Length: 315
Image 1 (cartoon, one colour):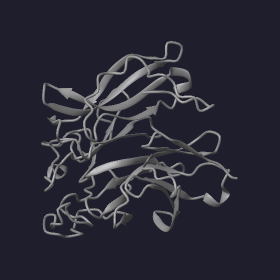
Image 2: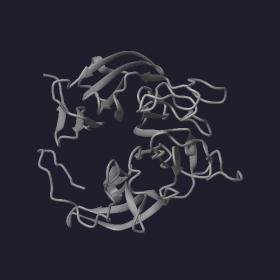
Image 3: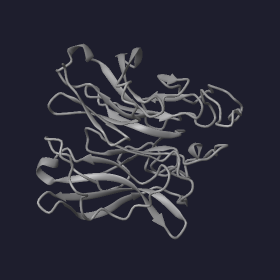
């Protein structure tokens, strides 16, 4: 974990970061600042934690950032996703955090399945393939849809997800928005709602990696939600953010999506929950786009896997 200052200088690694079980697509994942960070210096972050010699699980941690010592203090794990799985099952990790207006945390937990996919995303007795909603102390958030229901974990908000790699709160409505990877086809945009089933792996707009049909090869079924939009072929969507600045008036009502496989930043013009048009940006950078955020200066900041951070401003 590092800090990048306004001049573009990258810090040395922050001290006291917990041991991370990094392999494949899992490791140290997302970080979110408490809405009152300026006063309490509190952060939340997700990472893969070793369980014994061979397994790992996704966890959510909380800490206080001591700027003077450049270190984390009072680090504590507030949530652990169950069950732990073999470290080699390192795909479809999830791990994104979005803090809602009420202060509760939404966190994506990927299904971590291999090919052919298993159906744990459809089962409510585990956290795999789920959106969870927890308090800042890691408890099930009040009002969660499965609290008190036999055989269901109380942290679950929605289920039937695969690999949710983008997560944000709509700046006007407060709604939760999410992007997730399909296999070969079927990358999705969803607005996960309480208790709803988003279909994976029963319904999917794509096929498995070897070219085989997934399940019965159906794209819809009663009781399962359709995405607002999907890509086929895939772009491997990552970071997600609504445009909230004023530097680009023409980008009002835009939703930005990073593309890993596509290697561009996708600007979607929205009409409510409907995608009106797409505009690929940064297409000449040969960079897998990992995240996109709005800066307090109105600029759009875009992070790539090649170690570059792009700042988009008018010419």
